[in-house]
Image 1 (cartoon, rainbow, N blue to C red):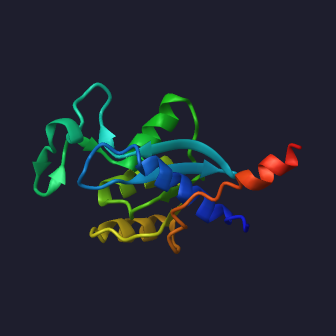
Image 2 (image 1 turned 120 degrees about the horizontal axis):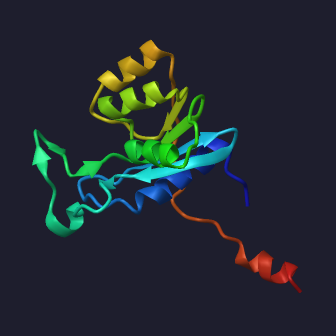
Length: 157
């Protein structure tokens, strides 16, 4: 069994975080990492205490669901609530950030974004380039978890 490299490992964690998303229009996950340590995670979902799209429907205005915070915003606010600086960190995101999330990522001091899929909003790419934030698009990691229970069981004997 081969180990995933760090980028695929953290993107796989972002994929796992996306499973918590509560907006059926898109499931997205984000993991903020600094020095190979997870600082915060996020997924797209409603603000704390509010209704979830999957329960009451989306609140769509101009083709955007306003009931939902994006994964990147939820990860950034989680880091802030716990006092974790993201300055110089890397954001691993399942989908290319929108313009609004790109601006927040830039303002927070994140220096690298790793994604495996595109987003329809091209201003994010322009803003990242102007701010010197590196965007690395890599191949989507495998979707299965390769847990080696067989060797674990034999090693314990």
